[in-house]
Amino acid sequence: MRFTMKILLHLLTVILFIAGTVLAGDYVRPPPRKTLHFPWDPKSSSQPQQVHISLAGDKHMRVTWITNDGSSPSIVEYGTSPGKYSAISQGESTKYSYVLYSSGKIHHTVIGPLQDNTTYFYRCGGEGLEFQLKTPPSKFPVTFAVAGDLGQTGWTKSTLDHIDQCKYDVHLLPGDLSYADCFQHRWDSFGQLVQPLASSRPWMVTQGNHEKEKILFLEDGFVSYNSRWKMPFAESGSTSNLYYSFDVAGVHIIMLGSYAPYDEHSDQYSWLKADLLKVDRKRTPWLVVLFHVPWYNSNRAHQGEGDDMMASMEPLLYAAGADLVFTGHVHAYERTKRVYNGKSDPCGAVHITIGDGGNREGLAHRYKQPPPEWSVFREASFGHGELKMVNSTHAFWSWHRNDDDESVRSDQVWITSLIGSGCNTRGYFKKGSLASLGGGLGTGFLLILAGYLSLQAFHKRKNSYFALILETVCAAVLTWVMGQRYMQTSKIMPAGVVAGISVVMTGFYLYKIASGGNHFPSKAE
Ligand SMILES: [Fe+2]
Ligand SMILES: [Fe+2]
Image: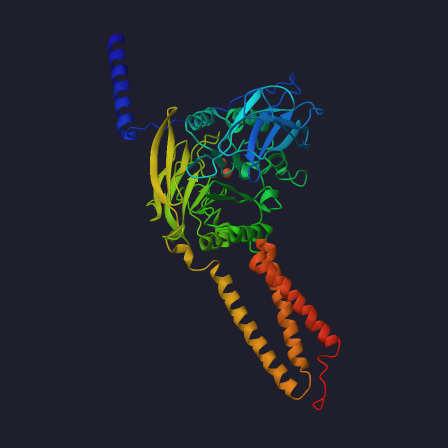
């Protein structure tokens, strides 16, 4: 009897196994993994911990680390040979408190100028381990690793191990880093987890909802994130660590803030507009944008959360010819066709949601059915992406699924840049261009009218005050418009020069009016 039961149980197991394999296809999706634990070591108080680097303007890198010892200096010694430091940089430090938690001393030190595509050896605070980093190349090809919503679980570790295996120059992270969620020691353990990778290649990050740790009116929303993950916002003309831009080889990368104001009257909107105006596509043929909450997402998770930001900012990105947009937030992978205004558009950007780094919340499995026409590939699995910009026109994108701790390339596509496609040759900021044309023609007509009236008055040996006032107003308006343009673009030609000439003309006309106009000799003289 017992023998028969054993055989029956065995048969049942075999049937269940076969049924499971047939129903699930050839990939059995694993469950979320537990959060890893990294004990904070209070003994080595002046030893640098949580070391990471980020790009900090042309040929410069920011080194960030934390010490428990408040007297540890913010210096970085560095050079191109191990143990030999030919240069030293002095930086700054900060610290913060959050409810009962007090952070260690957070050091930020900018090093450089650095040579391109070169390995440097460096030491933080004058003691401890030697680290090494590689600077990105100045020309194509250049490779980016992309992974969002990392967290600090067993799956995070798996994702980081796979990224470590690929040859990449810069890590891009579209938000949700540590999942500290107000438990500040989790920021420290996250810093320790990512140190091996983040100390050797620049990590460029933007904020997600898990970076926002506001407790009613008690705490600033991003105090931990801004203190620990300082990005080159000042270097890119931004006033907030929540949005900034930088160049790598021939790629201009814009990091936007899904959790900073983004409407047309916001600082972020003005900064984005000005930053896009400065982009020189001859120098940086690729335009890539990252932020946290996706605009194109056919997963049932977080539907509609990005709609307001999309309504505000998508027209700017479209007019500027953005090639690629990376987002996170939805814990799954999805790639779209080129899209704009909710549908396929050959001049829009390819949107890639890559919020599948491995956090403790697990995957977002449920999708809208049928898929929208713009959705090309979607899958709820953990993984990371690699973006290789081969040259000014071609890039190869691949997504690597964490298939039972093995990196398996599951989606891939060649992407052609919008440069040379005819898409962004229609005029920069269409509305702005039309307004400029209208304004220019109108001002020209008024100046011709003023000239005609002045000539008529001159024949009568009189002044036309109407013409003088018209000329003054035109010159003043031109000063204001071109002054604004100069402030936005920092370009001397033509904005700076025209603003300078028109301010002199305004002063001249005002002097004329004040001094009683032209003084004509009588006809006899
Ligand atoms: Fe997330
Ligand atoms: Fe998120």
